[in-house]
Image 1 (cartoon, rainbow, N blue to C red):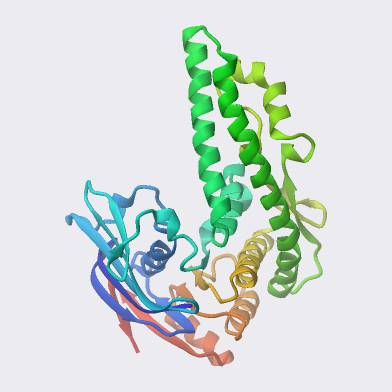
Image 2 (image 1 turned 90 degrees about the vertical axis):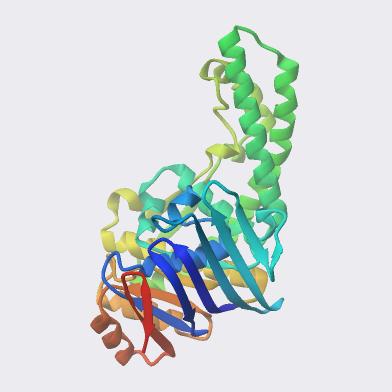
Length: 368
């Protein structure tokens, strides 16, 4: 799986750009604000139908314009060659097309272009709230399991309905057990499926993560990821029943699968509290490389890999190890950004890997 060509129109700081890509390593070099990361964000859009940085699509329209469009020529291991397009008009709806045919549901497109991204924002996976770690689990599983994604969407909708009903009861000093039970039954059935999938995912994922942490860090530190869930001990029906009174006064559902979390440990202690910046960066890089392997094992072909600002908080030795690693045949198409051309040149002088370098300046892209 790789992108042969990427086209941008009025996307972020790009008026227009046509980029012919290598099917191996693509390095985008330029000053901060030049538009390097915007290229990676466009590729991310084509895979996930959304931005990796903002939930408001209109914010990606170039200032002063009324639309943006992204086009990609894709070479797929399963579908051959096809063109994927994303377009948004200001105040309009987002449209995705495959070979000019509109996708009826964006969720149907998820997984068609498997992709893994590593960026400086990944530190939020360690230091942020549990919602970010749940999104990580859900994002990985959803790329290859459409039934899981469907169950997750249905669970979230039912959860909103139950919470709305609880708020209504509280505001109007009333209560209807039967009305609440309708949503309880739906949540219980869906939560059981989601919990099983998440548990199986972590069991398969952790050994891959531990392997990559050792490769990236070059140390013998003991790392682990623990799946924390209230459903380990009690099923969803029991949790809802036991917390019914608490939920009534809180006006929201206080227990369930939507409270799951991942605990990241290094040498038996939380990496959030005891890990150095280098250790934390190695931790999240290993998580993302394990995600690559996990997807690869599930779908049978290589996802696209995006490495944004890989020198951030990684020393030169670890960067070389990472680039050497992703340059191997095990990995497919890779995108890399950095601020210094000289650093990229030195890196590839030491590592003989097929690559193409693009100079980015003020929303323009030039290649050697």
